[in-house]
Image (cartoon, rainbow, N blue to C red):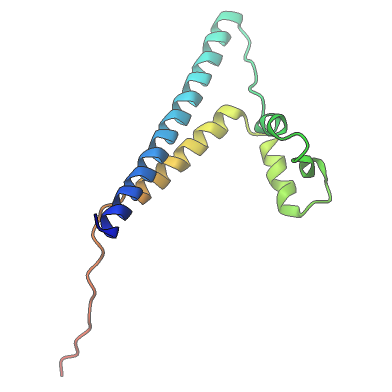
Amino acid sequence: MTTMRVEELAREGVAFSLWLSAVLLNMVSVLWLGFQGLQWLHDGRWTNQPPVLNWIRGVCPDMCSFVDNPHSWYGAAKVVRVLSEVPSGLALALLGIALGALSVSISDHRPLAPSVTRRTFG
């Protein structure tokens, strides 16, 4: 097996795993929204999804202490503010769409453009 074939197989494997992750994340976000809709039809009130920041704090409570520090670098403060407002279902859908676009760009099989040389006629 040549290195070109190994590279092609690795690219296909990565593209397939990204595509599968994208499909799973989008399915989870749609099912979550559907479950909320069914609860709304049953109870008559819309339940809010927990923001993404709740999940992050649950995963790494001690290591992510910089999130609460307002004196951390400015970009982190903006990211934290966005994450504290984004519902989890929307974040899952956006991440799934991004992974889907990334998998398409990795598995692209178009040939490279031919090199063009400019001829001057004179």
